[in-house]
Amino acid sequence: MSLVKVRKYKLDVEEVWHEGGPVLARPLRVAVAVAVVANPYAGRYEADLLPFMAELRQLGAELSARLIAALDGADQVQAYGKGAVVGEDGELEHGAVWHEAGGWAMREALGQPKAIVPAAKTIGGVGTRLAMPLGHIHAAYVRSHFSTADMTVWDGPRRGEIAFGLAMATGGRIHARLGGLAAADVAGNDGLR
Image (cartoon, rainbow, N blue to C red):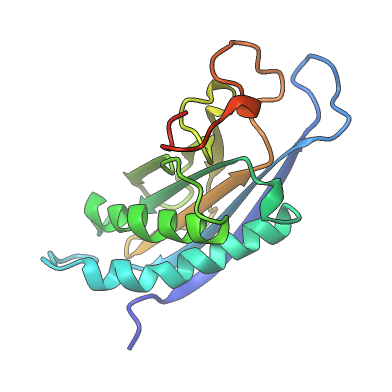
């Protein structure tokens, strides 16, 4: 019997045309996919969380596929991030299982980019908002791609649930002008530069 029982999925896509500066010819698109699942360990301590983490890889693959489709292909994705909101009967470690499962799935779907997938997690109730950090998929030092994507579900997570989210974006901040490593200059060898 599977440890991953999904109650609902949610997909949000936003288009940003400007932030007070010049209007873009093509908008920045940021997509967030969330699955609200039953927490198999709610209300109790479980020493071995690895079976849950392993099964969550398939959920990560599903959410990644939804994001890639929403953004018109993997070749459009320049930034990514992940997050989890654990309902009140869980513990933070129940959200930490998403680090490997969600990150692995996104990297697999995007052709194995080298940069770490930034993450956030928290304990919260229904409607908790989580700002998932975003970073460039090939190089963590690309300052223009440091941003966030908002994750929220109006009716989740409930006490015995976890909301797992992934985010992808077609670029960095639209009026980025603070220097640092440019996306066009990424070597992509070590995930940093």
